[in-house]
Length: 297
Ligand code: SF4
Image (cartoon, rainbow, N blue to C red; front, side):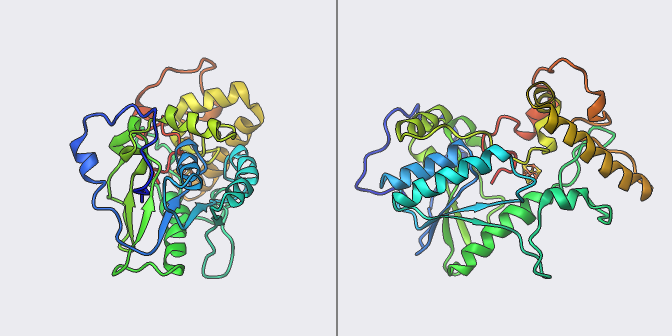
């Protein structure tokens, strides 16, 4: 929660008119455990910086790693610097992963590449253009954070306060639709009136580089535009995406199912037009501008 002895951060641009979103901020958790849901992106890094500055009272920040082969490598590199930086300033940042019932540490990339899986967890684009089911966020992130909260004593009778990094430019994402009984989400950046740019400025003033966008490198929600950028700026990662898409489709064809795309409905990655498309349907629908990645966590 916001420390009552500290003034709000200056430079906020004010929260756009959104009475429903603002109403969802209150009441904040009334618990003994306050956690930052740390995604590694700009907004949740700003929450951590605020915690190190005493603006937010926080017990721990939890980063749910979906797998070293799945996360944006730049995000993982950033963490190797950021975690010690935060620890030196009194904030513990813990990294947690999905460990299944057999004791296996799951990696979303390996699971998506698996030839034996009958279902796909990531939200691939179906031939007709609709997004497929998204199980990855729930299994690899929300449940992982939830287990950590429960391990630290959160229950439905005494839920943890979970701070989520949503800035004023994306206030519409602030809702409790995905809240579990043992957590109460709060949105300190909205309360402080901080935009994404305010967050970036805060991070830089703290002496840190602004973190890269945090999401799985192969996330289908980056849409055709994200993949076009990858093909231009990071051809090796683009090529790895083509291999992943081929593997998914080999498995689907074997199971008698239709082909899917990592970019946009029915269009194989390899056949994407060379030009970077303007922002259009898929990204607008899926929050392509979300700087915490595409998970909405
Ligand atoms: S970034 Fe995309 S693929 Fe990765 S867990 Fe989130 S929704 Fe799934």
